[in-house]
Amino acid sequence: LLYTRWSNEENGVCEELDGLGAMELAMKTWAKWVDSIVDPSKKRVFFVTMSPTHLWSRDWNPGSEGNCYNENMPVNLETYWGTGSDLPTMSMVEDILSQLGSKVTVLNITQLSEYRKDGHPSIYRKFWETLSPEQLAKPESYSDCIHWCLPGVPDVWNQLLFHLL
Image (cartoon, rainbow, N blue to C red; front, side, top):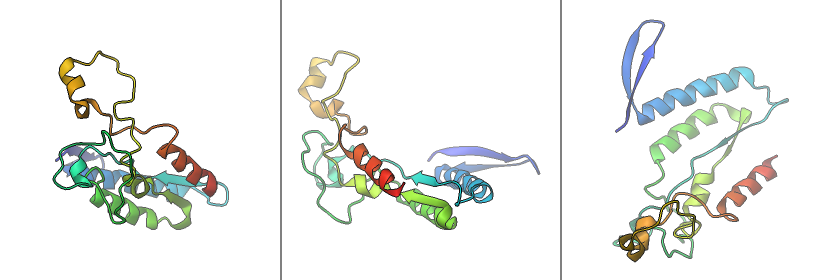
């Protein structure tokens, strides 16, 4: 677990927060600012959720040991959530944002993008250093399963945003 030290300057109290606690503190602070500053008749605020990764094929294919390398079809399971998505954080963010009502429009790209294990550059990208023979023999070892191909999934995110605008 990641812990963050946080201090309250008003009373000098210092406490340690785990990653979720720190994110919740940040989200509540941001939400309070949005609630006090944003006039929905004059400004629009969009909150885009986190982009998932597809680092472990066992998420969508139990028993396998690969990643997104050689994937060419989306995940075909409607209730799929990979281990790259932090569901407790997603739930906390949704709870806080729901309290803001119409002041914030949520663009949930996480669930949408979870299905697209096939949308990453994998081995088809720029390498800044020459790959070793050992790496070349095992493409899974250098597959990029975090970034997204263009055109592709990020274009869908943009289309959703343009629709909302």
